[in-house]
Image (cartoon, rainbow, N blue to C red):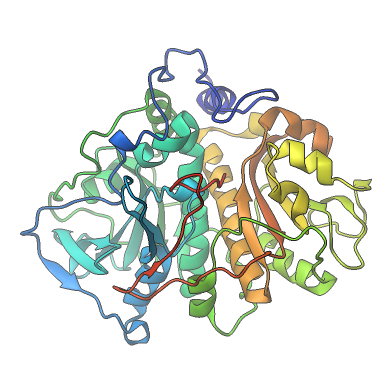
Length: 449
């Protein structure tokens, strides 16, 4: 196969088509699992990894302003809410949002004290390996595909990178001088954190200091359990491996402008995925422009905005950064409702931001980056929305309808609906004090992308 063929095959096999039911039936292909039962609570995955109890452990301070690293880890991945329903497993909600409440990410810190895994519920660091060679303290973000495939099957590979971008939007906002890298030696980083490259693999690195990142393993890493019976999804394994790199560390991603708030911690603990929006309410043009400026200034991929209810902005379709000349004018609410698989948020939001890409221009590594880029936008839109006093939610879509909506042969990446909530959400709690929330009657896993 030539470069990009694996990514294009993956994207085609996991695209939702007009007329499909939700969840969509599995594609008829030998790489696609045909017997996977989605949302089966008998196979509910671990919410995070498990390590032997005898590994060295350091409890982090619960007073977040005392330790920048503890603050960074908790407000990126710590447990801030919990939910329980009779007959269902207890669900943990972390500080950064996740499609369907799956939270398939793990964090590691490679520093002078060794390679340490972050326990998101206990708010602790577990030492799994000796210190790695290098200079800069480095946060390593990995993905556990089964944890999200449990709900979304093979499409869950997209969600790994969307969720990674969502979390990294918070991580980078918390550490403005940090640098995001997505081009690295995958096999070396996999060994560094004791992953296997199938049930867990690296997604991104964040260096917190100047100098070479601490990535040269100083010894073997302890291996934790990602689940009691994780399932491999061959299509995901093939797609991830096709994008693996072996070269030197790539250039860092561009930084975003500052978030328009003086209370980042409060915004993060308050944010969530808005479930209902008031279609009759509007947002101001100033807030609309501020949210887009923050979320899209450093964007790599094309993004479109469907405007439904923004003061002094004509309803219609726009392409960033040209907000003065709409591509189309008129009421797009019903069209967005269909595009968003008849989910009301697509119609009721004040505006919907839609990521896209030229799929034929991407190799497998660039495909990963495109999905992560869309996740960063979604995460930054969440932060901006809550900082400015409204709400946001990631949104699924019907892939085959997207080119007609935007008038270009582009592949959709991720949508974010932004608007005025019809209710007040309950904020999250601090380390060791998650807030108990009531989940929708439909089930524990929430209907996000």
